[in-house]
Length: 246
Image (tube, rainbow, N blue to C red):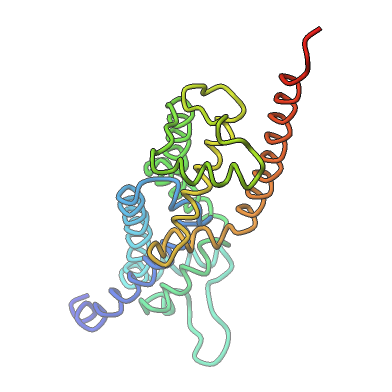
């Protein structure tokens, strides 16, 4: 071991960096995982997950050096005791290369049943630790229960959109929160907020919205249909009020 450590320490560090990058992609699958919790919690739990994989990777590499007979015996049971081809050797000889071990580890982790089960348990543990996606669910419930307030600076834009859809701006009343017009105003305000984020000044949000362009277009289409129905509703209300009473 004394002769091994100095000449292989660099490869062990490179292999660990490779495993950490691999762990990030795995921990952030699907990509919505990142937006399902806070940045600090996501980074901390990803690093812990990566550290767990690195410890396993280092353990396999060290075992190949310290206990080659045991590693070969385990490989024989798994059916991978040796590697064919020119220069091929037994399993312990192959795993004594830290870079090779890192590549094999990343390739076999999602495919080898025993490693796959271990990886799934680690993933679920660190997803739960990072509150993925529980944090987003709790925020959604908190937002659902909270009072929605339209920003004062939005009212001019709301009146503009109301005229565009043939809605009388005089119907906009912030105090009547359970009316169809307030629901329309709330949706309009949220869409305007998303449009403000979809600019070059907010590249992260813009990339997020571009990746979900289809869903955003569906929301806009539903909003246009709802706006038309709101306009028709208030026109009928005005017509009804204009009818002479009998």
